[in-house]
Image 1 (cartoon, one colour):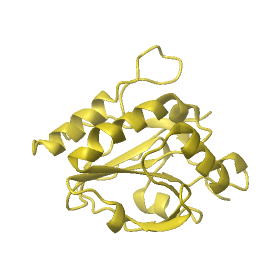
Image 2 (spheres, helix red, strand yellow):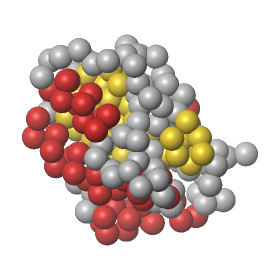
Image 3 (cartoon, helix red, strand yellow):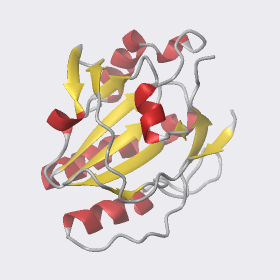
Length: 185
């Protein structure tokens, strides 16, 4: 696994729009219909990445903790499924069901959305405010597979709490780290 940091899209960037297939219910969903009233967390993940597997339970807990506060979570997989078939839509659906995802798990077949967000790794997090302006793009927390640090989501939770409470979010944000997005050749 190649350890890759996120690209740190500039804060204030407007969320690029999209319409993608939600593999959980096989319907097309747009950013506009999925966005939250307080904020929206767009997460680039995939089925097989050990970094995503390491934080999966925390992603579900984030959804449980923040959807009622107006922050909706959206997961997107943009990996090349020709070379990584385990990340294909039929496996995404099963993965989402098996893991109890309570957020949409969208398939970015053309990789257009990942490129529009300048996503680089899985997991890669983009937190937008109610106006879909980027307020946080950084790591979940300091935990990584094998480093012995518990997965708490503290960095992302701090940003989400500040957003919910109308407080300033620190611009000092540490990049997320994970497997590189598997780009098509």
